[in-house]
Length: 106
Length: 106
Length: 106
Length: 106
Image (cartoon, rainbow over all chains, first blue to last red; front, side, top):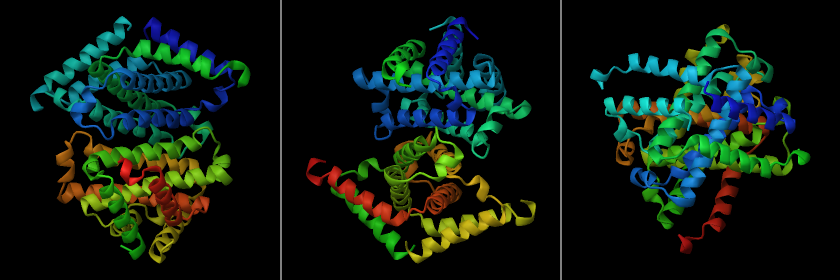
């Protein structure tokens, strides 16, 4: 994993340890927390048209970026708890997708 | 953003462009695709105990890592579409969390 | 559908019409609103143990019942918009489940 | 609750008991199963335009109705486990919504 992501992941672990939250951060619970954050992202877009969703700005865009950050935070926490290298898994999955969705068929 | 994440994000964009999928990748649609992947992650854990969720292995762990990759992929696609720097947003959100959840109160 | 569910569904439609919300209540948008409510339900349980989740009471139980009501409301709105008889579909699905999960195999 | 919903709820309980699934049907686990089904509903609509989502037909409409049935099934299972009267909770929530969203302000 890139240095910066490893550093963020370590800082997130330290944050949880200091607050005695590690006991709650089972993969099961983290998957729930992650989807709850994903839903907060969905909420920002649910009544918008496709076009409106493409042109959010200012405070709304800032809020959306923080919901995305929350998702990323739980993704990194879960990676750490399950000892998964998120970047490698992503590269592997992209290779699978290349095979599954060949360009000519699209 | 770190070099490697930028590279993944660029490759994901190219993947979408080549398949003429960019038209579908509005932030609204991507938020739906992201939560659908988050739900596939939840499905792996829904009938497991907390302890069982901590000791998944082998094929199951591999599948979980790919669900997490899918979430990350949509997170990067949305970052790109909305011109959000995910790493910066995450650092900002972590600073906010430090203030919101002071250590002594936990 | 039973009289009472039909009545609730009609009242929900009237509620939306009066507020000029029908334009937003496409099946696509309603599916997003529904999952956002489902996530609020998940949030109530995400850090609880299995046992704790079984013994929620008072104000917390009331809040949970309202999240469930919100899910049901969007389920009825979507049924109405797509002209689906939710009760019949549920009975059909239960019959399918009987076949899919025979008792002896469990 | 209306007779028919009570009957469906009883049948669902019997279905779970016969398969020895009651042990898995904690409110926590059911909230996860419910959102996983809600996500399958979302998946049907994620790449559709608002208009396309309004005109689904045939096999696709049937599948959507079964996803909605699955959500309703878990909603009833959770109501039963938490001793919540879903119909009453829904009526209460609708009364709250009337106050929260007065017609003139919409």
